[in-house]
Image 1 (cartoon, rainbow, N blue to C red):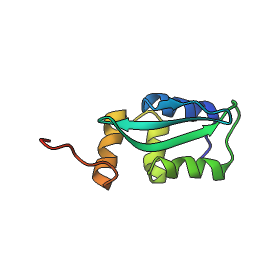
Image 2: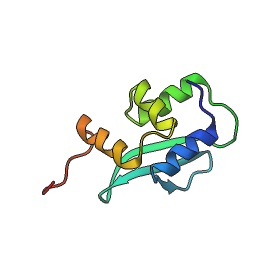
Image 3: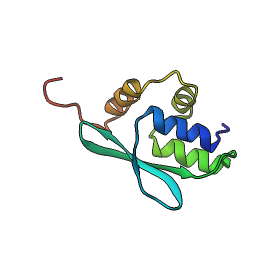
Image 4: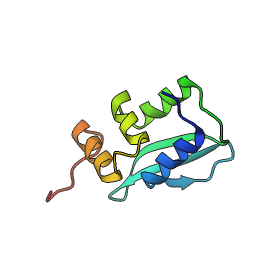
Length: 97
């Protein structure tokens, strides 16, 4: 799958990733219920990302290729993404849910 750095930025914005100051990359953490769950980053710029980098970005999101395609295609919301991570065991379900 092809992905540009602008697409990666849109994904990070959609997931409301909290930015971390970095001189080399756009970096941040996905925070759920006050807990840092995943660290994400991509390079600055506006061009296409190499396939290996797209693969690593997808893996850092803990998604299969099909799930990643849906997230990049704007059919998956932040809440749906967090629910996917809960089902996979990356995020604990809070008590009372």
